[in-house]
Image (cartoon, rainbow, N blue to C red; front, side, top):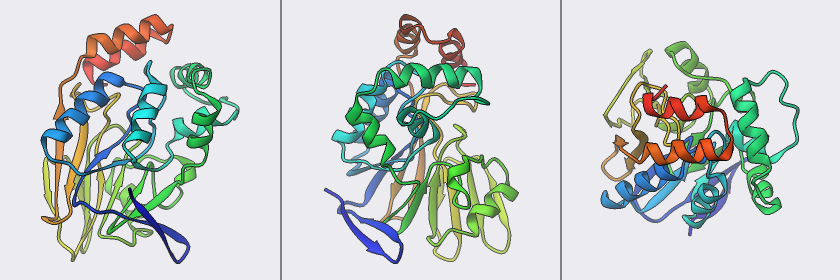
Length: 257
């Protein structure tokens, strides 16, 4: 089990085991999650980290949440986790997201809502940081797609590596004398630089690749690898339709958008 200690005002999680699966934006997609976890086991992963949005959009929020809890994932809050665990008004939400949040709220038990409501926005895990959106204003759920947006987070990043999610698009930004970034498959970490790494989405990829995405961080080798895993999309789509969720949520899974 992870051990929590306090470093200044920040909770730090100390873990045994050096190979971490970094999961994000599962969004209640049981087929995507189980496929990713099987792949992670095949890669000899020893610890699991979750960057938030365990629930929302897909039809198995309770099952996915319980699996994340069983794994003992160090987890931060995503915007869907937050809105599904509080009765906040959804005015201004995209209609697809609002419909999914409203449906998901009705599926979760009081205990599950409490678990989600108590998740922190940011956590330090050994020598890296995790957040769902941005380090500068995590509660505003901002998106990082470009170097200028990454720069704002780098100003608050105290560790060499920070993993984030929220955009559903795997990207990596590197800060040395300036910030550069783009798509990646493998990264070799240098302690002289900083890295802001998006691991993509397990439950609803949006980069044109329909396969589930997650990353493996080998802390001993100082390497990050993006993994893409095929899964049973047809079954996930069928469940969305049977649940009465918007058809668009089913259609987009097959095209990765």
